[in-house]
Length: 461
Ligand SMILES: [Zn+2]
Image (cartoon, rainbow, N blue to C red):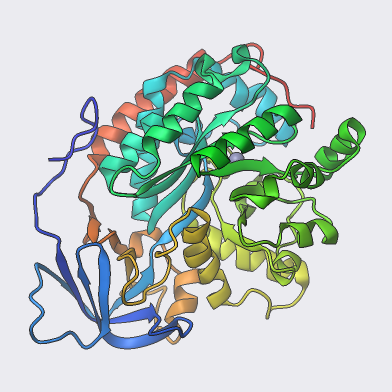
């Protein structure tokens, strides 16, 4: 029986999910070392947490659970490379404001009213939404990381969890949490939930964290064997201020501190020069691209096409619901294609397979799950199944383009993580959604109703 502290999570049914057969579906899958391709009318079968095979299921295979249907499209489940999951609690609270006012007048004001248990309910609400839109993994960056860890553990998802640290004095940290508290939590949770939880250390950004704090957190991450996850170069203004303050850009600062020589996930990288793109193109550096936030807050747009051409490993993220409103990575896939085709003035940039690769394979690797993000025998059984019965799919000439440009989250019928169905025929199996919506909404009203006065800290670019 799954439990979650006060009991957010309720497992609806106890079932043996050791062996699942997905019969006669279309699948975007890979055999051997080939890149993934669409294969029609194949079987996929799982054993334990692994995708055991793709093709024609052996007669001897005895399934505990069978999913079948020629209208189903199997894709690797999605990995969200940058989120602030519990910010579902302030969804709709900071609308139509530029970035500096959005932080100073809303987001960092609401944080004053945030309590530890709020994070659990906000993250649980996020988990419902993510699973329903085909996402099994998230790189989360927020406060009281252990609350989110419990939700990940009990929901069956995967995550890279970073407890945000500003490094400007404990009075400016949410809940007064010290760096040592955050390091200890990372040590406790890294590898938990059968390896579904990975920890990272989460300096907020070079514009908030003094260099000595970045350096200290880098050393602590190396000692723990975990990644860093931070915000980087979100605007030209930040770059100019960094030059004025330190004589170098934020990317140059990280490079000089040695932080690009260790595993690091950098959100945004919007204002980066060609030289900086070259410096970021290294195997241990991942970048999260979250275009919905850039559009909604009227920020600059990261030069994604140039970044990919430079060899940078760019994954996709939703960012938090305070900026992006929702956690639907299917929409981010679509927006990424639309924005960058428009930006380039060339329809051929960012083809569907590239977009899927970013949201699935690069996303999984950015979170540290090397065996996920691809439907290949022997990989983790992290799978989403889309139902293509709706009129927006017909005549279904190109199912992959349909998935990227025409699908709705309500088309997601089944979602599996490590061989376990978290969404089964449209029903969440691990989360009590009605209860979570009610409790999270109640807490959100308290937080946003109480919010007022000065922010806990000040953004100046
Ligand atoms: Zn962020």
